[in-house]
Image (tube, rainbow, N blue to C red):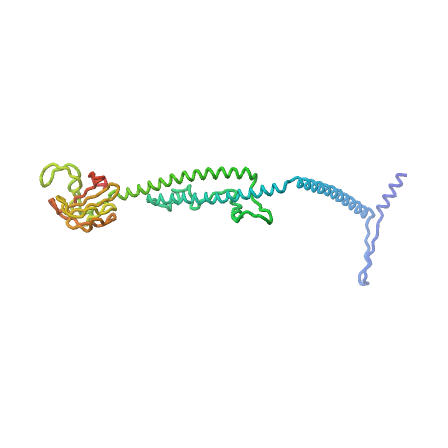
Length: 344
């Protein structure tokens, strides 16, 4: 009986089905199609399987969605909204304060940079040479997580509307760490400011001292002049006695311009016994220069003069055996060898 049933099913499925398509117009031909009976059976079976799978997936994911939704409602009901809003507001205040402190640190760093540039300028260094100041950039920039939100925070603390999305993580730890960093930086900046202020004062004093040191040759006509008598003990050309010569005698022809060897103020301009027409210049910091045996004086007592300014013309006045310039350098009233300053 089973064989006959299987045979019947096999014959049933293997039978051909004929489909006739009759056109509405007589101009088209009637078309006939044939297919085995098992093909539509297979199609129906596949559809039933697909629908079954989709239905089971829908039921599963819907149950998961309902479960998640219920869990979220339970979690939300346990959250203390008021406390969270208060904490969020306090965090925003702290971030605003930190952002403002960051800007103050940036300004302080820029002030340090400007002071550094000022010191270098005082010392005559090239302030355009970035290689000498690589640690301080042209624009000082302190980077922190606040940079991402500073424009928002700087407008004030939002009190309504949508939530403010701040790009920070583990906020309490981050704020504490930034506070510690800000305190350390502020402390270091104050120490650096004190050091730089001292350096600036020292640089000004050093520059002023450098300007006071007479290092220039005292005559315009350099080629036709020469040192005829050195500093120290010598035989006086008039008395033939040993005497201590407190300067240099520079042999040069009449009316050669005499120039100051550093910036200063004229403290004497007139006749000095033994030295004839003479000029004394006070350069500050204990440095003075003295020019004697002049033919003509071009300045007056109290005049301010710059390095290289003409103050007189050479001559042969006073106790002298020929046209020359007697030139002295005095430090705190003590004559020093001018060769140590003019490099000759």
